[in-house]
Image (cartoon, rainbow, N blue to C red):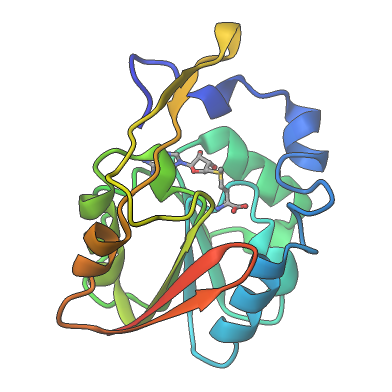
Length: 194
Ligand SMILES: C[S@@+](CC[C@H](N)C(=O)[O-])C[C@H]1O[C@@H](n2cnc3c(N)ncnc32)[C@H](O)[C@@H]1O
C-alpha cells in the first residue's frame, strides 16, 4: 500500500489514534455508513473487520462475535487498550494474504481501505476467500463511471499514501459469480453473498 518503507499510520500520535482517528463527528459511530453496516451484519455470525484500524466499527458491534485485522500494529495496540475484551481476536498482517483458511469467518467487512491499495482486486478476492456467507465492502471514495484515477498523496514528514478512485464496472466485475447488492448511504456499501 505505501510506497517505500514508511507506513503513514505508524507515524500517527498515540493519543490522536486513541481519541480522534476516524472518531470525529461524521467519521465515527455517527457515520451513516457505519450504522448501516452494523445493521447489515447483525445475526449473521462471526465477523472479520479487515483494515479495522482502532476498531471504531466494534463500538457498534459489541454484542457480536467480532475480530479485527490490520497492517499497523500500533492501531491494534490502541484497539486493545480501548477494548481489552478483544484480546486474542486481533490479527496483524496484510490484506493481500491474510493467512486464514477459506470460509473462516461468516462475514468479512472492509471499510475505507481499497482506495489506499492499488492492487485492490487481489485484496477484495482475498476477503471473498475468507468469508463463508457475506462480504461488505465500503468505499470512502465512491467508484464512478469514469476511468480509474490513481492518486499518490505526499504528506510531508508524515509519509505518503494512495487515494484512488476506481471505475464502478471494474469493481462490480470482481463480484461475478456471486450475488451482490449495492446500498447507497454516506458511504457506498456493496453486499456480496457467497
Ligand atoms: C483509513 S483506515 C480505516 C480504518 C477502519 N476500517 C475504519 O473505517 O474505521 C485504513 C486502515 O487500513 C490499514 N491498512 C493499510 N494497508 C493495509 C493492508 N495492506 N492490509 C491491512 N490493513 C491495511 C491501516 O493500518 C489503517 O488502519
